[in-house]
Image (cartoon, rainbow, N blue to C red; front, side, top):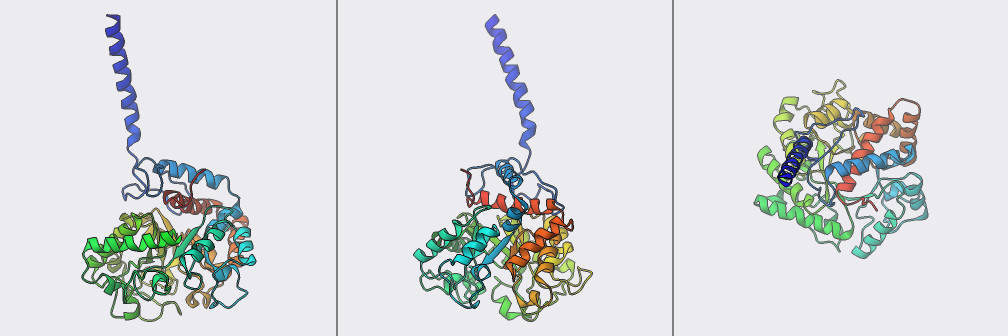
Length: 419
């Protein structure tokens, strides 16, 4: 009888424990759209539960906790450094920008270490052979002081903006244009193409791809349309989704660009600030659906355009990456994007002709950007962001949130591994 009573008591106890624990099983994984979290307001958003993320055996809650702990133990200077993705010329501008650099100079090493840089982008000027590239990347990572770095490449899969089409030793993974590359392909074939791109980049040592273009092509801008997967929203959505899945499933960090879309702009957006005159309704019905598919497919980053969208912003010449209405209200909140938001390359003439480097950097962060891409002057950019926090013009919580997002992505992709 005593044994029977003991069994009943133990059964009831187990039931109670199970019932109490079940309430904690509700949180959603990192990328689900239902799990709305804090945006660029500076509040830390908990990301709990969920399955292990690609590239790591850790759960999303563990990733969040580790990233938060890392941020707490970093100095302001280390945190600010994490927010920069630069190229080798910016690390050592002593030579012409067109000069090829296949190894680190002493100045590059000093800059990486002194400014705690979070990532480096390599181009055809830095990549020659697989062995040389791996050695260069190893030397870059040896300089990491805040965290392991992003090592980025631009591999869109087309001819004009793909590293593989410019380096003889690499397998050319593209075609003449991105649109021609996927023309006639099934969704499975596009997925496989994304996997091929990611495997080659990872083999050479890269962990971040600044691609694919997630815009709708337009006959108004045929040169840019060649970099898009098409001019039909449904087709482009399917292509982007499968390209992202293909790369993401191979452990590659993926970037969608250029939000909210510049396909309908006529002219060279790199030379001057052009205006996309699409209405918000048009963008929602077309471009946003493509970005939503890419985000749901697992995109890590979204790069914001340097074109204006005058029918959305009060200032009709304000580039998208400087607009809180676009970066925070639309991308972060309406599209519920939880990952890393990037600026466009800030060394483009469209930016440098119109803004000081200090203004562009600080205001882009205020707008909601997390990662600052290729500013014209790394020292001025870095000092401006540190000074903005120290002077009280920028809340350090905004920096903390941005860096936490960056570190979360590096952890979940297996770029940053805890010892």
